[in-house]
Length: 619
Image 1 (spheres, rainbow, N blue to C red):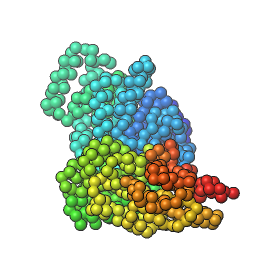
Image 2: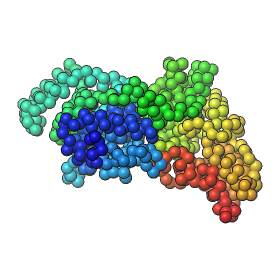
Image 3: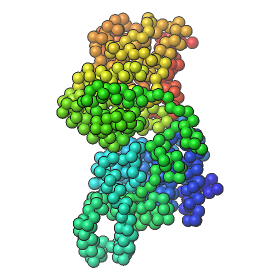
């Protein structure tokens, strides 16, 4: 066994070249073994094994800066940088993160979880290196999926013109989560077909020594070559027109060649794009055959590739079914997703209504603006998007949708705490910023039945922009449809009012039972609509002043509880005691939703304890 003796990148560098294939084989076995037990991102990591080993053969990531894009392909990097023994805790509460985290290791240069920012971050690091007169390499490792995001091109445009020594490694596997769509993947596919270009370029440049641009003959030939290349093969010049030296395409599973090319890229001392093509899921047949399923997967049987526990029906599944029903009813209904057709439950919709389904790739800002265009011309667009990724479209929500009160519907999936992906993926902001955008209606179903009803209301009854926000996973004990009114009373009680919305209503109902056993009679109110909030309606429900607890899995500043309390105070009905149970100003780490609810006191026990302390019934 080689892998068990790898404690740092220095151990990788000390291996003989003939030992590297065995190391890669052991790494793939290690990945399948651990991810099958904990769940996680498998296919993307299997495809990046040789590339990651090559990076650690050529560079020293304790000094050189390796910036991951998205970061879900960092498992091999972590295994080679002293964290093998932590993989049994992968994506668990207080365990090893599934994404790069600088607090874990000096080898993690920058936190990563969202797409398309790596080139911009890396350019900032390269410029800092120059300003500080230091000497180290800076690399951005970006997938072709992330290259569908506009920020990637903003970074490339600026980096190429900067002249800064910077290596952009384009890991091209033809996929993000789903197969890539759009013009860029097609362009990269054409580039792959010309491997002879790289060989000629290396030979040609080597003729003129280490600094060929200082040679007048080389500069003249370079201009001639560039002109001819633009005429005969215009597709090859995309990166070079931005100011990069383009190396590739390279077989991303040819480890010796990868090492040579990365070494050459380092020696060029300028902006370089190394185009590497890989196979997502490489080396594990089930992941190669179905890379989308094994992109992010729950614990599974490595022998069969089958999940150990089949996933239960989810809010996403119910949303997808409801969308098919609504689109059957009205031909104006169409669906938009950002590389998340399966995750948002729209796969069947795409098959049923291919002409009314649009995958915009990893480009949420574009998705929002395109939805605005559809709405402006009389369609009813529904943009299904994870809460954490909708943040990329914030400006467009204000400028392109809200200002004209366009009837765009947002299906905000993964709202609230989502679990094992950690800080970068929790949906703890949308309830705050969507509620503050003028004209937005924000609906919060707590059950499948409410989701179906609220989606229909959003499509066919409410004017202007509407967001329907719902959690990851399935419904809990509360399965009724109480969505007819913006605010409903689920339980009577004279000692304190418990107010919440969405799936957390389950915790409030359970907390009320716990409090009843202690002699505290808690009223439970459920907000079905958190924006706009009607003062007249709130005054009706809060006719008497008593303690109020508001429960939310969102951050505290600008939360619903603060807005409710302000409205009541304006009406002279401020609660006798206000208890806000939320995330305050904390990012939530990895862990199950139940563990995180408990950590932040958002579960039934935490609510009951807060009430007992606040109103003097504690032990």
